[in-house]
Length: 277
View (cartoon, rainbow, N blue to C red):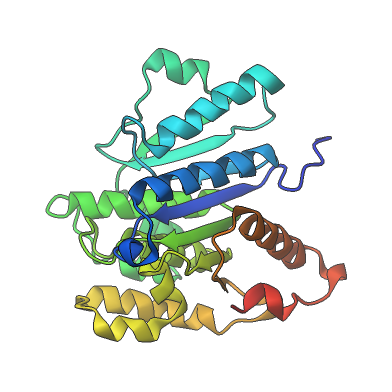
């Protein structure tokens, strides 16, 4: 039995944070977004959580910085009871760790590169996920299919997802990645805390009326329509939870409260201030 009494001990928190086209208007840049992402990952790990990331590996990037923190954690706290970081990539992307480094860090960092597999359809034969996945034709669209498989795996691994920012245009998959990640998480019955603080995709998930001004292709608009049935849920059943905060402390506190109210019926229904912007 675990004796870890930290607020998020044993929780897996999905992180979907990336730059958006709205950054210049906010007075921020890509480096500020990276620093924010690394900071919130560090704080979540310190509270006992495992962070679940789909970020790729690059020099000076988020995965490198978060892994360095895991190494520092190892020196201060010893071997953890669960991995501190789960990183899932879309093939052919691979983690920036040698085989020796992966073995050395396996108690702290778990990495996996995934490809599209038909099992995604059979595992979800009665859900919207199966229907949506039929639009992929691996081979001619292998990158989009592998990205979808990665996001599906990320959704399976997390208990709650934090979505902030996200580019509206220039995506590699069928739709912007943060839309797929948010939808797959909600479709799996798990809540998504969606902050509008960096604009971008996250703002349009919360306020779909903004999509009318965008040159979306049809399947992207279909994805937003799929999110409609989650926006209307309230109380303990709320899955799309808006926020306008960029305070790491406030966002983490909201995630902690949402998880507690969803799982402990004795606390009563979830207060509206947790599920309304």
